[in-house]
Length: 141
Image (cartoon, rainbow, N blue to C red; front, side):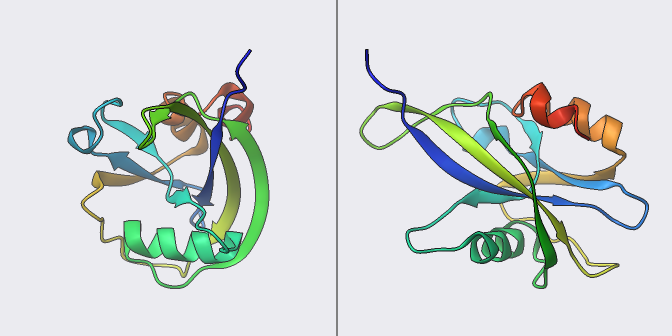
C-alpha cells in the first residue's frame, strides 16, 4: 500500500472586535480542480520558514494587511481538498490554523487569487468553509 503524501498549509483565523471572521472567496478560474469557494488567508510554509513568517507573508499577499499579532494555535485538520503537484501525483493538505489579530480598521486589498471577501459571523463562516474544511474545524467556530 502506498502512503499518502501531504503538504502543510498555514492558515489565519482573523476575527474583528465583533467576532466576525474574515473570509476570502477563492477565484475558481485560477484553479482547475476546485470551483470557487470560501477560505481563510494562508498558504504553504516555505523551506526554512516559521509559522509566523508564513502567516505574515500570506496575509500581506492575500489581503494587503501588513501587521499581525497575537498568533495563537487553534486547530489542525486534513482538508477536504487535494491537489496535483508537478510530478502529477495527488497530495493531501494538512491545515494548521492559527488565530491572528490584525489592526482594527485594516483595509483589505485582495490579490488576484481571490474574487471577494467578507466578514461573517462564526456560524456562517462554518457553513461557507465546509467545502474545504472538515467538521473538526467548522464545528469549532
